[in-house]
Amino acid sequence: MVRQKTEAKQHYTERVVPFAAGDGMPLNLINIRGSKPPVKCPVLLVHGAGVRANIFRAPIETTIIDALIAEGYDVWLENWRASIDFPPNRWTLDQAALYDHPQAVKTIVSETGSSTLKAVIHCQGSTSFTMSAIAGLVPEVNTIVSNAVSLHPVVSQWSSFKLNFLVPPVKLTTQYLNPHWGVHAPDFTAKLITGIVKLTHHECDNTVCKLVSFTYGSGFPALWSHENLNETTHEWLKEEFKAVPMTFFDQITQCVRGGHLVSVEDLPGLPSDFTGQAPKTDARFTFFAGQNNRCFLAESQIRTYNYFSKHRKDFHSLHIIPNYGHLDVFMGKNAAQDTFPLIIEALNR
Image 1 (cartoon, rainbow, N blue to C red):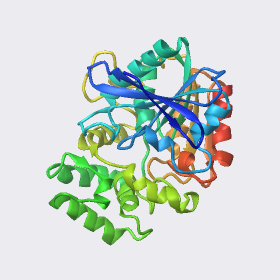
Image 2: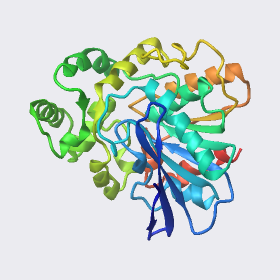
Image 3: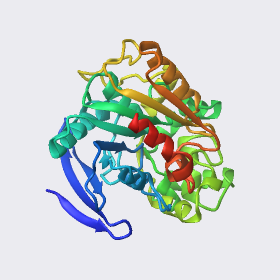
């Protein structure tokens, strides 16, 4: 069933298009269009872990969706199994790569009649979608813009320490970490972790912002620079970060140790080592990395760019963006001037 509503501010029409993942999990796509019909192909936007498709719609003057619609693209947002719009579940990147993204792509092809599309992928949406691409599961996608991390997750020493020595004892007490504990901490573990974060993080008065940094990185803050966010966005993000399962942290720990993405479930259709063969995709990648990213270091995207360029020289591209981090690439108050034109240029190539 398709629901429809209109955003008065931009006069956009929004359709929520449900689809079933390959293992039957109910997911959805959000198709957003302006007052004029799109003149370019569909573009799929894929969010990261513990957030939702709404993360691309921060309360800034011009969002990436505004920029894409103005450029004539048909915009689709994917809510995959990591989305906080769905009940918490113990997902892995393997499940998303094999079951979610290929079905999202097929649904867009069916809905639009377009045989090809482009994708803008972020964080764990990027890692899992890159897994899909390398395994040859999304051949319809011919252009991919990847932000923050894709094939080679590289983290700081402190983040590595947390993954290796703090995650194991935390797993004994909870199946999820949840930055929304900064609004409501429901049990002893939530209250304890929130208390520790309040004692050790003094960068702002937003406890959710602090818990995001504790959960995902090593900075103060880790995923953005405060000076890049307007106050409305800083307040808005309190409801945009919620539960992420420890199954994800288990997998990313193995990936960081191995130096590249690895499968953890031995699912048919996915290689165990995603660097052990040439990518089974003809898509052109553009890799973005904020120079100040304290979640995944910019070296992550540099290594992946080098890997893809080894297999196809002078085809892919890389942008290291000064004064930006992880999510302010999309949420920053000046992103429309600083980062969106680079994303549009990459899609238009």
